[in-house]
Length: 467
Image 1 (spheres, rainbow, N blue to C red):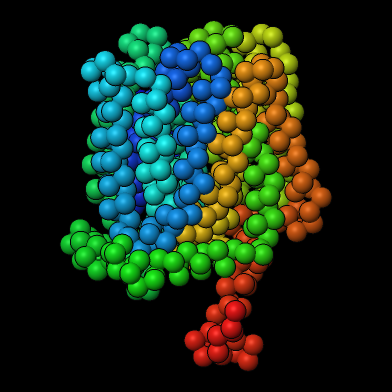
Image 2: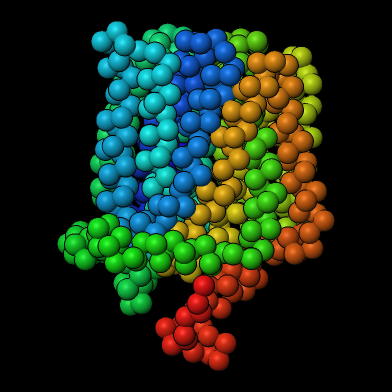
C-alpha cells in the first residue's frame, strides 16, 4: 500500500494539485465500476434467460445504439452546467437499474425487462462523456491533456478490468440480479463525487488560469446564468448549435479518418455481441468475466502507455497499432488453449487503448473549447454508430455458423483500418496528437465559409439565396 501511494504523485504530476480534476477522476472510476457490473450482469442474464446468441446480439445493439444519438447531446452539454449534467445522469441511472431487481422481486422478470432498461441507461450516459471531454480543457493546462486523458481512460479501463472479472465470479455466487442492486449504490457514490466538481466557464478562462477552479458560490452563479433547455430550443439556439457542429467537421480530414473507424467498430460490435455465447463454449459466466476483464485490462495498459507515446506521429501509430491488433486477435482465436487465448486477448487491446487516448487528445488540441462538447458528441456518434449494428448482425450470424467465426471479423476490421490509414497520405502523415491543429485537420473551414460571404461580409450581411 505504501508503494502504491508513493507512486501516485509521480503518476498524477501537476494534476494532483487540481481538486476538481481529482473529483472528476474519482467519480469516473466509481461510475465505470458500476457500469461494468451492470453490463456484465445484463449481457449474461440475457443469455441465461434465452440461451441464444441472437438475443445477446440484440442486447448488444440496444446497449450501444443510443451512442449513435450522442451528437444530439452536444449542443446541450455546451450550454448546460457541466456539474449538473454529471450529477443528474448518476441520479437517473441509479434509479433505472433498480427496475431489474424490482421485476425479479415481483415475479415479472423477463428478457424484455432487461432489453427495455438497457438503451435508456446508455442514452443517459451519452451526456456524461461529452461533458467530461468538454470539462478537461477548462480545468487543466494544454500540456497536461494527454496525461489527464490517460488517467481518465485508465480509471475507465481499470474499473472494467477489475469489476468485469469480479462480476463473473459474483454472478456464479450471488446471481446477476444482485449486481443491479450493487450498481445502484455505485451511481450514488459517483453522484456525491461529481457534486463537488466545479468547472470554469469559457468567460472565466480569459482571466483565470486553465487549471484554476471557481469556488462553489461562483459555480452556483454560473449555473444560474446557464441557458435553459426551453430557452435554447425556443430561440432556435439548439438547432443552430447542432448545425454549427456539423459544419465545423464537414469535409475535414477528421471525416476521412472516421471512415476507417466505422469499419473497425462494426467488427468490434460483432465480437462484443457474441462474446457471451463464445464464453459459454469455453466455460461460463466466469469465463465471460475473465474475457471482458482482459479486454479492459489490455485497453488499460494501452491508456497508461499513451502519455509515453504522445510524441509519436499519430498517423504512423494508427497504422502499426491496428495491424498489430488484428494479427494478435487472429492468433488468440486460433489457439485451443484458453489460458493462451486470454493472454493474447490482453495484448490485442493494448494498442487500442493507446490509440483511443491519442485520438481524443487530438480532438481536445484541435477543436475550439466552445465547440468541443458538440464536436466530441458528434464524433462519438459517428465512431460508434456501427457497433450496435455489428452486434445485431453478429448475433444473427453466430446463431447459424457459430460465435468463433464472427469474432474473427474484428481481426479483419482492424487490419483494414491500419491499411486504410497507410494508403491515405493525409492520415499517414499526421503529427503527434498534441501538435495537431484545426488547420491541419481542416475542421472549421466549411463553418467559416458559411459564416462569411464571398465579399468578406458576414452571413447576416449577405442576402439569403432563394430555394
